Image (cartoon, rainbow, N blue to C red):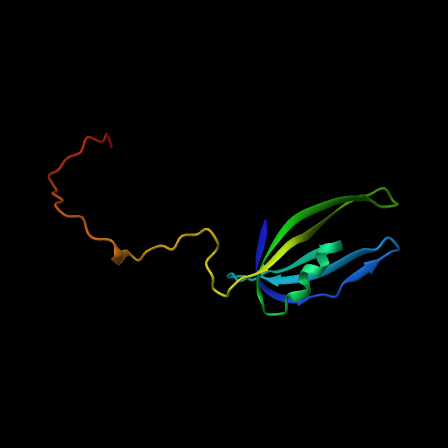
Length: 125
């Protein structure tokens, strides 16, 4: 999956515990009718991918959705979701999505010639 939009925030790298776990957060604002502010976490060696990105830059981020189950001391089960980034790349503002061909304007097509209203075809509908 991917998220595309404008960088709103690039967080500092945070370290947790003695095991060396690292996390860095990125907020991407989508560019749609109702913009969404999506928090994406980069962990461990992926934290360094954010070094060359600044606020305001247009980016495309490849993500994985992660879900966890946790049972609290009272025995209640809770579920948590996170969005984890694993690749990021800059995109040009206003660029068409990759893989989408440009649609030629309607004027590029010539009107059909020699069309007669009395021509019948053999289609059953």
